[in-house]
Length: 433
Ligand SMILES: NC(=O)c1ccc[n+]([C@@H]2O[C@H](COP(=O)([O-])OP(=O)(O)OC[C@H]3O[C@@H](n4cnc5c(N)ncnc54)[C@H](O)[C@@H]3O)[C@@H](O)[C@H]2O)c1
Image 1 (cartoon, rainbow, N blue to C red):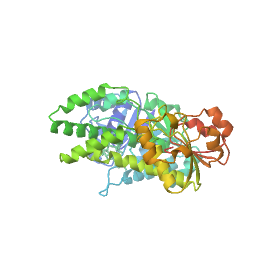
Image 2 (image 1 turned 45 degrees about the vertical axis):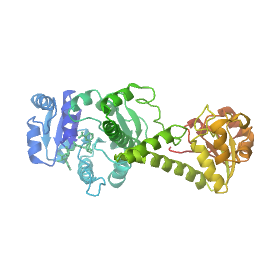
Image 3 (image 1 turned 135 degrees about the horizontal axis):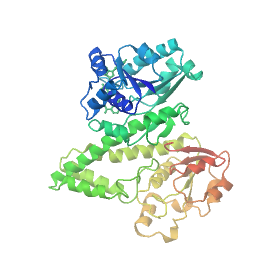
Image 4 (image 1 turned 120 degrees about the vertical axis):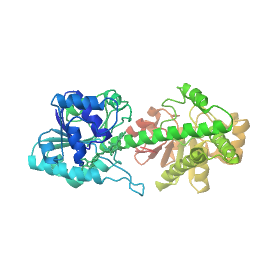
C-alpha cells in the first residue's frame, strides 16, 4: 500500500520502518525540515535498535520518501497514519493541538483530491477525541464513505520498539461504531489478532494500559521501600509474589464491580497503612487504597439512591458468592447506609441462615444490622415482588427463576458483572458498564 506517516518521532519512525519492511511504500511527513531531509535519506530521527537499518533498506529499495508537503503525501497515498505528539500542557491536561492541526491539513488535502482515503490515528488521545475531531472536520466525508477513520493505539516500548511492532503485545482497532473494520487492509497493517471496539473504547484501552503499567511500577516500588525499611529483599518478595499466576499475575481481581471487602483485605490494608505511617514511610498508593474503595462504595450507594425509588431488594449479602461470611461485606455497609436513610430493604442470600450464624458473623449482624432478621427473606419471590430496585451482587438465583419474576418496572443494578441480566425484561444498569 501507499501510506503516509505524519510525525516522524518514535512512533512515526518505527511505524514507517516496519511497514516499509513489509513492502509498503511510505511517505514520511513532519514539520521539521531537517528531520524530513534526513529521513528521506534513510536516516533514523531516533536511536532505536534496527530502525536505521530498516529505513536504509527501504530507501535503497525505493519504498521510503519524506516531505514537508501534506498535500503531496495525501495525494500519493491511500492511508494516512497520524503519529504526531500529544504532550501535556503545563496544567497537566492533554494538548491535542498537533493532532488538530495535522487533521485540518490532511482533511483539506483529501477534499482537494476527492479520492477515498483511510485516516488512522495512532497518537494517544483521551476518549472522545477521535469522535470530536471527526465531528468538527470530517462528518460529511465520513458519511459519504470517502474517508474511513480508525483509532489504533500504539503499545510499543522504546528500546524494543521494532520487536514490539513485529510481535505486538496487544492490537486494538477502534472503529466508528465498534463493528469490524470495513477495510481489511487496516487489520493487515496492524498485524496480530485485533480487539475491535468503538473509537472511545480503543482510546480508553491505551490509557488503561499505561495507567496500569504506572500502577504496577508504583506498587512494586512501594513494596520495595517497605521491604528495604524492614531489612528484607524487595526484589525477592516481588519475585515470589509474581510466582502466583492464579491470584496475583492473572485476570483475578481485575473485573470492575464490587468494592473489595471480606475479613482480610480491608483489615490488612489498614494494618499495613498504619504501620507505614508509624514508621514514617511515604507510601501514597497504600495510603489511598482504602479511599478508592470507599469512593466506589459511595458510587454504589448513590447509584441506588439516584433511582429515586425507596423499595430496594438485595440479591446477595455476604462479601462474595458461596460463603456466609458477612465480615467487611460491601453489601452489609450499603444496607446499613440505606436503612439509616430510611429505605425499605429486603434481602435474599441463600447462604445466610440466621439460625446457623455463629461467632464473628453473628456478632457482625447483631452489632451492625440488628434488624437483619426482618430484612432477610427465605424466598426470592418476596424480595422481587416488593422491591422496585434490585441490587445484584451475587449469582445466588438462577437466570431462569429471575426471568419469571422480572417486571418491566424493575430497575436492576448489577455489581457482579452478570451481563445476562440485561436480557431480562427489566431495566438494567451495571455499576461500571
Ligand atoms: N514514544 C513512545 O514510546 C510511544 C508509545 C506509544 C504511543 N505513543 C504516543 O504516540 C504519539 C507520538 O509519540 P512520539 O514519542 O513518537 O512523539 P515525538 O514527539 O517523538 O514525535 C512527534 C513528531 O510529530 C511531529 N509533528 C508535530 N506536528 C506535526 C504536523 N502537524 N505534521 C507533521 N508532523 C508533526 C513533530 O515534529 C515530531 O517529530 C504520542 O501521542 C504518544 O503519546 C508514544
